[in-house]
Amino acid sequence: MTSISHTAVLGAGVIGASWTALFLASGRSVAVYDPDEGAEARVKAYVEQAWPAMSALGLTERGNPDRVTFCKTAREAAAGAGFIQENVPERLPVKHALFAEIESVLAPDAVIASSASGLTLGQMQAGWQNPGRFVLGHPFNPPHLIPLVEVMGNSRTDADAVETAEAFYAGLGKVTIRINKEVPGHVANRLQAAVWREAIHLVESGVASVGDVDTAMSAGPGLRWAAMGPTTLFGLGAGPGGLASFCDHFAGTFNGWWDDLGTPQLTAETAQRLSDGLAEATQGAPVSELSARRDAMIVAIQQALRAVEDSR
Ligand SMILES: NC(=O)c1ccc[n+]([C@@H]2O[C@H](COP(=O)([O-])OP(=O)(O)OC[C@H]3O[C@@H](n4cnc5c(N)ncnc54)[C@H](O)[C@@H]3O)[C@@H](O)[C@H]2O)c1
Image (tube, rainbow, N blue to C red; front, side, top):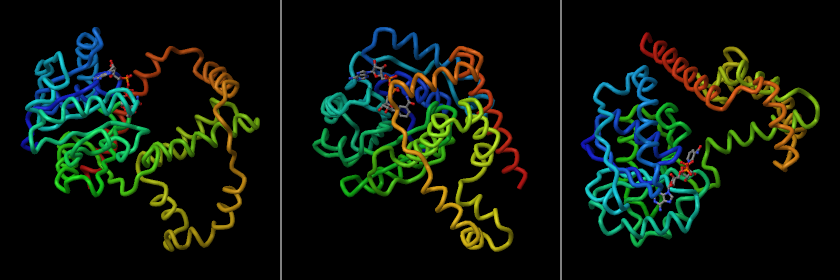
């Protein structure tokens, strides 16, 4: 655990509630600010529901779900916190107004990380007089279960702010990657977007159903990708010659496939076709049931991966 013992969460919707649960699980106190009237009840219910899964992953040994306070202003929540996770709606004026409000009350060595998925660090830095302590800390939903956090600073960021954020996240059991250059969607969302684009193209061109395309992913490459990334895996795909041999064998094949990939647009018609296909594939199971199944599987996969790592 880093020396940061008190944290703040600003904006406690889907992502902020999940971060709150994880920060509490790590033994830290959390000051939450969210203007929504129902936020306190919603966050408390979320923490309670998330606790068993975090316990199953060994994340709650030092935790106490009651060490959360709900503040009337963002300034009140941010003051005195060593690490602040910002999760307000993905709209630049909302983020800028929040940063302007809290900047003067931040502890000098506090780090503030934004969960923003689409806005870039540079766009958000414009809301600060001095953005030195401000970094990108982009999680994957739900942050209390998925290890990845994409961290980014740039020439306007204090060098130790990025390192402090990485150490803080590592102490929560997260796995961080460093983003070196601003691009919309950072890294992981671009990878998802590339795969989903082709999944939609395959459905639209009648190659396979929504359910079968999803199964092709979860029963095939998705399972391998939970273990290792695509370049590492292809390095294992052509025997002892490794990646060089794989590229030598398959350059023509991949270049041909890339030339043939689709470029669909997510129109209303396409969204309807996908929704209909999904309802058929999942036999109309409600979102809550599918979410619970997803979370149980994510926990089980991580437990299995950990057992393999521990036995090495
Ligand atoms: N949903 C995802 O899958 C996901 C994944 C990673 C990152 N993110 C990012 O996390 C951020 C939040 O997304 P979300 O999905 O949790 O949104 P959300 O709409 O579920 O939650 C936003 C919360 O912020 C509150 N809020 C509004 N104005 C506020 C203010 N001025 N100060 C404090 N709180 C305020 C709202 O009441 C709401 O509870 C966005 O930047 C988004 O890009 C989302």
